[in-house]
Length: 213
Image 1: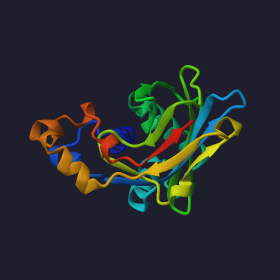
Image 2: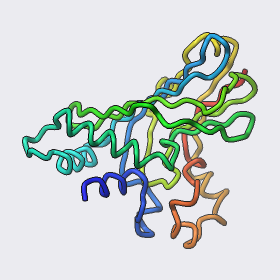
Image 3: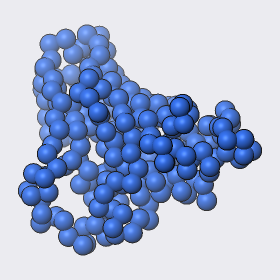
Image 4: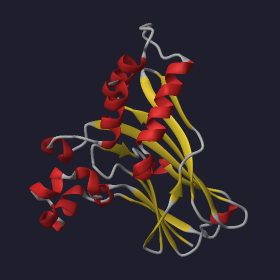
């Protein structure tokens, strides 16, 4: 039950129609995009801090010895569950290179922690194949189903690291939600929301870092 609940909250496996229309889980995020010395994108480092309500539910579900804290073994079970649950969703981390999607590899390790009564998730992903820091690159972190809101509260929480980006320009893009809805009303149908797991509406609303090299 507890694994299913965490999976449901993170990837919306069986949400009813109204739940698909807006977020129910919230996380503040930081994304560091690292370029290697050879001018390729090396890794994307994610840090997510989840809201109090969701964090409390995770504590209740995984605190097997009921001591109101998460032991190392319990945190490891949370890490394993998230790692497995988000595999089909590219760990909510997305890359485009000159307008084309770039596949990412699953993280070797995903670390869960519990700090100040909030769930903290830390992991890195890498492109599956060598990705040059050239042309136009777009990096985003979002839930395609819109059930989980990944929020970058400040532009400085999306950063470039490494000499490979030395000659690149970058900007944080924050789409206007009202404009997105107005421009995509034809997509906002009952049939669309009835199958939230197989759409990618989240990218229309997602904050992203665009890099030009």
